Image (tube, rainbow, N blue to C red; front, side):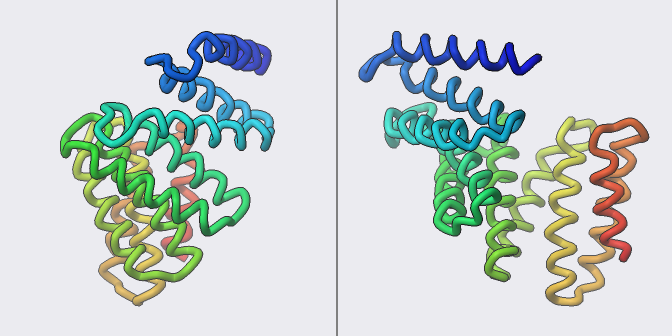
Length: 219
């Protein structure tokens, strides 16, 4: 939709939140809805103030979902994703470390095989890969690889997110190849990118990314 629609959505979400003051059983849900809308406006307009407000809202929602709350994992994932994004903006190591802690706890709360388990694996793996890029920690890289393998195993042929998992696993394998010189890692990287490319034919919005990643592996 248009940015005008988004602005109206945010205005209505703010109004709805005022009707759910502290103590209202649905306040956590509406905090989350407003935070997600503000993050989307940041993506569209680059409004940093919106993004900072979104993180504050995610923190408040998490505080309303203590250990044992059925939606705690959702708030942990949302906060972790927002902090990972802010890390990519600001480079704050504290944001990245907190994102990893949030994603670890969220993953521990997910049951294997549940619909969002693969997303939780993927979120933690990506955050660990960011930290590897920052610190060079091979432990982070190896853990990211194991998590991405787990996510890929849950996304068989025909799964709409298989292409993303193929790309993510290939990315960390290429990093490990460059660190260790393992030809097996490089060979697997190339196989994964070939499969990902078949899932993203001409006209696919992510084909260019896949071609670029494949080219980097072959370089």
